[in-house]
Image (cartoon, rainbow, N blue to C red; front, side):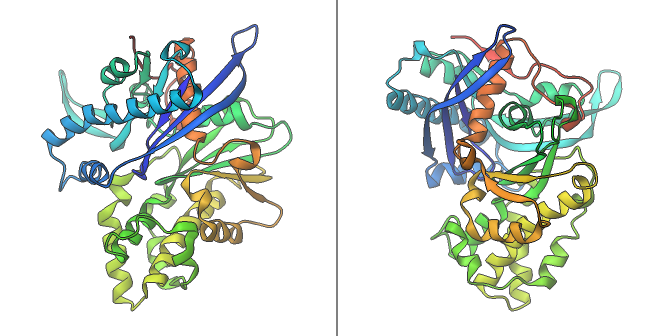
Length: 390
């Protein structure tokens, strides 16, 4: 199986070649990463996609072109991965692709239905499945969020099923903290059944930090490597306090968010407020980084620690490389809770979500559900995704 992930950071495509073994009941017994490939987006593509994530700049003609064009990037990532592994397309059961989220609505919105006004939930991940299948010669599983939305869920996060498969422990309570563009946590109580797993988006991950760095450097830097700029600054408690008053942080799970909330406009407002307080570039970077760490820890205090005993937090995603962010998060955690990264468990920090979608796609091909209703609020567990045959 090949899993593809292009997240809200808009940095590129993660492609994971995954071997999944099953037992006599055809349930997953082991998951092993065989090869990994990262295809970075070009600056031009990144700006095209970013423009689709705002109602002020999105255009239907560009949306249509990017929907098909992104599939060409996904196909290229698959071909490069197969070259690394010295495998032919015939050796792969399916490519499992999340797609690029451009807009996500996690709450019901009014819509004129056939029998009067009704409510719908909606989310849009682009990257045409048919193009990907045609270019690679491999069946494709994609559009994973739609079925959970149809079943009454918020459509995200979907990775918790794979987190359960990969990281559950009989004696240790674990938090799987992904820090991509958006930060999300999966709560795995010790010895938990799948029905006891919870998860939700805690708020911004790298998204606000990256946008801030681009603004502060006039686009010369795309991100704060290892948190170096933030390490040289001082957190503004005044600005951070105002940022943490965001109602999203007090909203009880299930919940999810995205670039439509914490994108370029949010970062621009943050920068403007920081300049009005006389903050330096380093101070602004430090405060933006502290927002991610504090909102994550705040979510634990309100929605996790009262209900589950936690022994360790396992961080993955691009945020796992930000030393300043990890230090800030460590300082926010109670004594006795270990902080580590997925790499310590043999899962590369940047590959975990791509691996997860290979797992979800496998379950879809087996006809098994892989959403987690206790996470998304769906009425029932359902198989996820659409299958495009080759």
